[in-house]
Length: 401
Image (cartoon, rainbow, N blue to C red; front, side, top):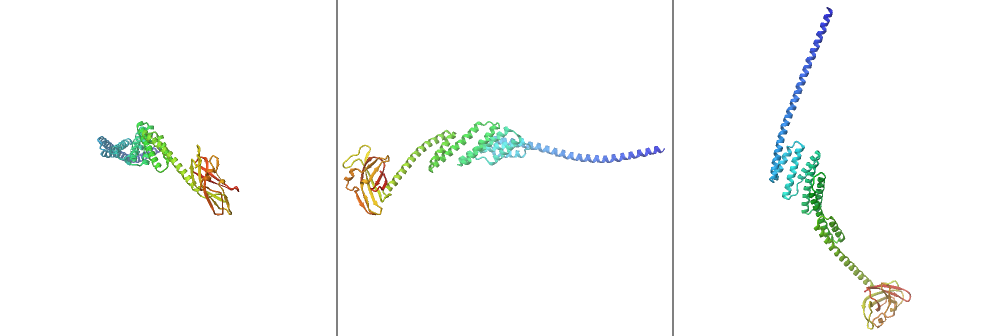
């Protein structure tokens, strides 16, 4: 009896525990289910709404793309631009954004081409944004197309800068155009004709700049630099007509430069002769007497004789001044005349037939005498008159005929 009672009590305890656990668990499970249902329901609503929005955006995106393409075909660039901008605002994927931006770039570029205006910065920014999308998608062919488009824009800007007279900006933009087109080639966009065109435009611009600068340098007297720039223009070998212009200018400038050099050399020689003639007339020397030559006359004959072939009679009016402390003897026999080759002649006897030849005399301190001397000597443009007295004192004077 006791054993059965104990078993009953144990059974009742177990049942009560199981009952209590099941109720609490049921309450917890029920609450969790409600929470999960609410969360899933909210997420489902959000996904449903998002799906509806995406469908609506896609429909709207396609509508504006279609409208934009229609306006683009009708050359209505203003409305086409607006349509594609609206399409871009409804783009939900990278491919949609890429499509819209490429149409935007095409629209702006065609507008710039049709009006002759410089393409806008907006166009470049749109193309660069499109380039970013292409880089993210690793589509090299698409990237090549955009690089080509940027090259076309830079080309247009460069040509407009060139027309406006800004050679530096034009060169910079055409160089950028060339760089982008080369990248497009590397990315598989075959545009050899466009590359050749930009290379021609850039080369032509550089040749024109060098020719123009050379002309200015020539005006400024920088003759060698002007010819050097023209040679650089010829080496570019882009525009055959401009290359020929540069070659013609080189020939002309070289001829003029040769003439200028000869003229400058002649002027310098004449100036030197003038200075030497001035020195010739000035009294100077290293002894007690100084000598000067006032006049030089070349004659083929005297009253008694005629000069032979290659020879001449040269008459010199010679002055002598005594700068020493005592008296000095002056004698025509102290004088000789030398050629550049070293041939020396003493005074000719015809000297003494002149009425005012330099006669032998003695002069005191501060006194001077003068008179003619005649020499018979080979004809040259300059000589050296030598003076040496009985004491061995010597002086020389350069004679310019």
